[in-house]
Image (cartoon, rainbow over all chains, first blue to last red; front, side):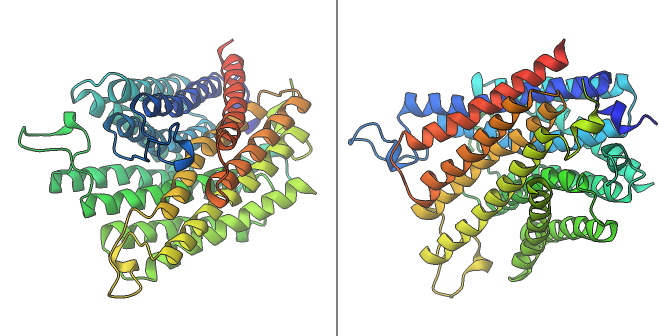
Length: 152
Length: 152
Length: 152
């Protein structure tokens, strides 16, 4: 097995791919805050008294457009953040490059699709469910591999 | 002090234990989504119009069984995800194996118990509070050790 | 470029700074739970039947003081946790020490200020927005650098 020196170097194509997709997904997640902000201004839905732009406005928590983006964002926290942790440990188990790179790609693309069909243009089910389960399946597979490497 | 090469290798029992518990806790966290899904179907509580299975249903946000699982899941995000970050840095401070392995074990077991008594079978307090504070205490201890290693 | 051995060692000032700020921000985030708890007891706002201290109380979800702390905490999950992931990968790209250390410092201080003006003493806007965008900007910059290192 390769040593951690080689595994965490950008000359390792597995680590390079992981690094790329973490970068892309971090940007994607941070954009959710801006998307929420856009919806808040569009619908004049602010959650804090100090955010109200006019004395006529009141705090509001139930705008469906704002809440939709917030649900998509929360779904990111629930799925993308655990992937960041397990993906790094998976790289350190020295997996086959072809498989590992395609798993990272699957998670990255599936989570971008999940956002698009959930929070940008609402596409009927099962599009969101499919995107969700592709990323979930890949992450669970990595977690099982990591557990297997650590347990035996 | 050992070098990062040895510290992040599965031949380091501390890293091996960390890796194992991250794997277990990632699977545990991802199962929360499925548990939420089960509760949604059982109680026909869906948050998005495109998820409604029948034209008679309306979106609903206040089912207590769904919300309970969602609170447990959010509590995981708040506590397990910071543990992933600090645990890795704690491994890199080259801690005593016995202590470190038992801290990881404490976090892992306490967070599984937390889920069981919160979202699977509701057990009266202080069971959930105890599980919560065991994991919190262990994580704070690691964070303080990490700060001490970095500050001096 | 230095090898991962040197990059993830506490003798690398960039890694040392990253480690320090992750430790501080983990403690800060975990304190949000205690702050929520304090507000729950002060306002007798409990979300679970098993948490009610007296048979006269009912579960409650809309106390503005509790919800304010919870929004600040969620904002931490959305912004600090992605920083942990991208910060580590950014360290592994071997950035200029001066820039990297100041970026970590900017994120750390901005997120502490964000909490103070949001959940401790409410300070009028744009203080919270400024703190939010300083940390966001620094994190986006690191993510773009990480993507650039991995893509070329």
